[in-house]
Image 1: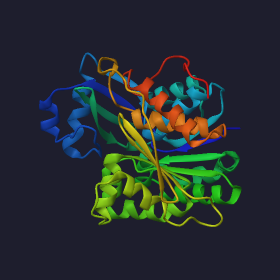
Image 2 (image 1 turned 60 degrees about the horizontal axis):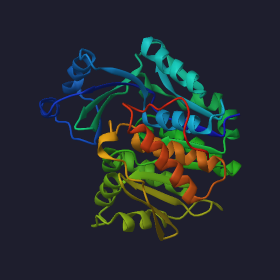
Image 3 (image 1 turned 120 degrees about the vertical axis):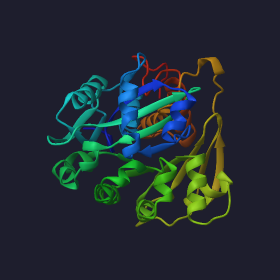
Image 4 (image 1 turned 135 degrees about the vertical axis):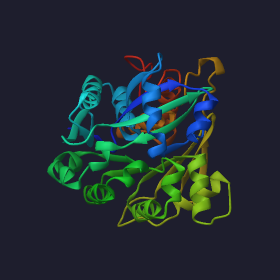
Length: 339
């Protein structure tokens, strides 16, 4: 049975290099992630027409689970739930997960196409524009039908993006972890998740059940601004988030905030520690798409083996450093790393 279960929005990444003109035309911001509006629809066709276009299995949670599986190198140690369409994109996602050894439990919506994410890359920095499509139609009933997988998992993880789709599923899974003594993990994922009041409300409702909260410095600052904390100090923000009371007899929450090449900030019970990130020569950087997801993948793989915070951060830093040397959330056949 899988020890790590991910629940999220499965997307096929349509990735290509673009110019400032494309960023300006569609109002894109480097490092940002947004849901596609009507004005963004032509972008998907534009990328698909480019000679350097790449199609890569994506979706934040799915990236994390595939990286965790790669780090563990034991088929079936991870599982994933989300909704895809009955189409070519859906088949590409299924094949990618199977090849990686992930136990895929997709809900299939025969009436809606598989979700896609336009990954626009400029100067090695990415911007993400998502058409959720079928991913938006995931239903908690599918989780209930696969509850045995959830109950058996030691760790359940969802990126904050899943809040826009099925907060009910997150509530069921986080409560199940409370019941079984498992670990529930969540990611802030993008500024808009913390800025939109109904989405932020789900984060706040889930925090008492959340053992590990991940995010990056931009998302942490966006959260602080949204709740009126009047600070940009990442360590202070992580500290406050670590002090939100836990449900039942759960241990204290660990808040893990990555800062690109700067040290990772970890706050537990109001105490902050920083874990260094090994410097990567600029010329080795290909693109940052999937870096944060890959960090969490390596981190959770180490956590599932009972490793301490330092070892988890080290594994996360390693997997992120590999992914940013490849286009999209991809990696070599085997990691040069033993957890």
